[in-house]
Length: 248
Image (cartoon, rainbow, N blue to C red; front, top):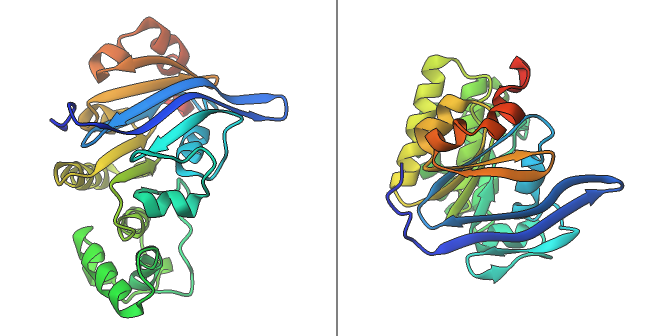
């Protein structure tokens, strides 16, 4: 866990509301992350976690409320502008650019920061090595295993040179060894100074990595605090841990 809890707040949402017609997906939610922290967001399916991520990353605009990233008001900013400020995100379903190699897929992220293909290739090469995919750099991305596709997804986000990284369900579907390796990678990235927010159903990973957990249910934040405290909360047990096995 990060020791940087005393850092300044670099990601903050206040009074967030997101409506889709008559559905309130996120309802009056406050959320903040300090520099250097690793924070988890958990909750049953349909709790509003992914909607919150999409709001923070600029993919959705809130119906109400405000968002600040690294001191900038990003409430109405587009996702590409938010990314250029220093916030990158992964996607739950990894969709590689099928005709490109692993390295070329990661170069797409690097091109956020430069118009130079040479510089993008250099940055992407370093990141591919950093996440343990160096031996696969020139392979078609479609030839990767699920675990390595997820590493490539993280690499593509890292290539944008973020200060804040949002990881969306990156550990789902991994076997025990793959999960341990992925947890180790994420922990190291955080120890190197990257602020990380994780939406995840794999409780083992959240408890192992995060110093603070936010729990959502029906679009609202119902608990927040250290993992052991939050997971013992009767309201959390009822809303999340007491749900069906498919949600756990």
